[in-house]
Amino acid sequence: MKDIVNKILQNTLKHLDFPSDEIILESPRDIKHGDIATNIALRLSKSLNDNPRNIAKKITEHIKLLNNSIIKDISIA
Image (tube, one colour):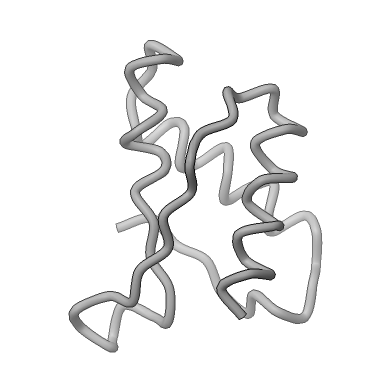
């Protein structure tokens, strides 16, 4: 599943014209926070000169538009 999520994130970054960066996917410490977590928005904030929350919002909005069956829910921590 992480491979599929990684591919979705890579395609999303490309679609949003965000710089390509290594995507690190982790399991959250607390299971209440879902199955997979990433800090890609934080890592891109410096190169995009933007707030990580704004970047995360753009990423999540794009992924929600995809309506794929792999990602049931996506949220910003």
